[in-house]
Length: 626
Image (tube, rainbow, N blue to C red; front, side, top):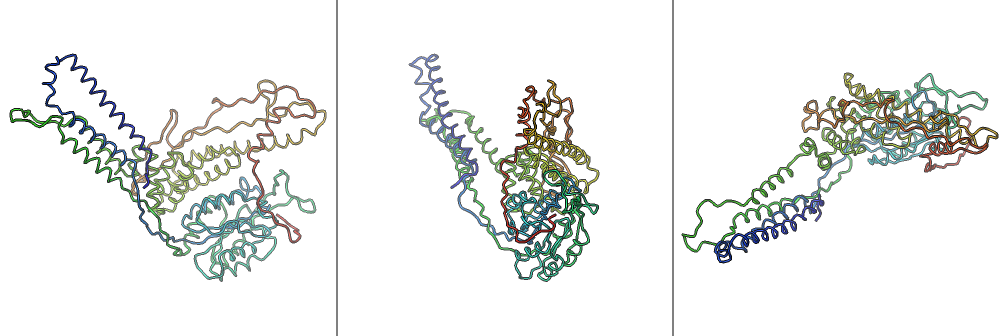
């Protein structure tokens, strides 16, 4: 036996407390009788009252209360198995990790945007098996086909230009790695999504694509970058140069990517505000789903009805017992109607309340402000209907309210598959708010920017579906300013890191720092942190059991003075900000000042555990590795 709500057992402490109160009440009554009534009359006044009956009645009431508490704890034993058959597709996502993906012709760079696009594909395909391939001069299967989206996102986050040791860009190796992962049997539910800038330096991707088409694999290519191109900026901040010393310019090759996709029945799309949506809705969604293995979900059986029925029976029995002894003769039968004790109606009201609470739907719990119980109830419902867009939307709202942003975003992502454009637009908007909150909670600037860029994409999708959404437009504007602030802060940290690494080697230079002067005449390398947002309005339409209601009443969010629902208020210059640390005076030549050391350590925060996990020896010379 298990209990779904074991915390309710703490309410059993009420039983001994009430018992002590009864004893104290009897003592008080006895003392008052002794003061007011003479001993010779006292026995005649209480001769009809039975102490045994009174205590039996009280014991039944206490047992009834204990049974109610046990019912609230929701005892469960046994399981019912509900078969669920998975229907979906097999999708491999190949991400180009060559150094040309460091070009910044799209913000912040091609590789970051490619990873964000891959994450969007993962979240929009909850029932599909997805795998990950990293490729450059060769290809590696980083994650086999799985439905575990947490593992996929964790693996994707580690992708960088060091993931694949051998430089270059080889589409053929990526396509052949895909064919090997799928196997050679012919199916029509498999697809490869190739996310790259299109500069193939070796291999024959078109030939491999034709072979994949014979196996029923459709290839969709996603171009990252611009045809005009941009320089490849290395982690050192310097542009990449070729052997002749010329700066390398990397351009998006759309024609080659289009040819590879069309050879397999797929299509090419450029990564932008509408690229991933076009890929998912017009490409992946039209691939035939296959019927997967049937799985049985075990759902515990509720048995709260048993203690609840017992409590009601005990309460009813207590009302049938009188405190007085049976009458000895008709003359001694008390006249008038016998009344129920006060405790009986109180417990009856408690029972009725219990029945109402136990029968409350998740939506009713949400509308009454009980977000934690609503979230748990929605999660129970999702075990039975995991792919219901409306149910996922409601679960996302409840998760947002209790601060479970990761689960909330996953629910919103599933709600984006709805055929109702209004519900889909609301899901994109709320997903943007959720990612905004997650970005604010990140300490690492890289992780913060990743969440912000993803939130920007969600707001753009919401505005594309409803250009008149003023709340989404305003949040997007504030988010863009927040991104700019964070990017500037990241640049200052990188500059502080460079200055801290170079300054110890300089001789005869004054210890004064170069940077922003502080109020004490010194300088500080402390970056100013971006302003934090006020509460976002998570709801575009209340949680509801009827799709038509998604456009109606909205649950009002918690608001603060000077704040509008659905808006994010920027903090101005007059708000409280952390002042720069005062300078500790002139530094000795050849030594770092305390402020320099502090700035250097702050800039290195988040880099302590970055370890390259993939090491591969090069088996042949590389002439071009971008």
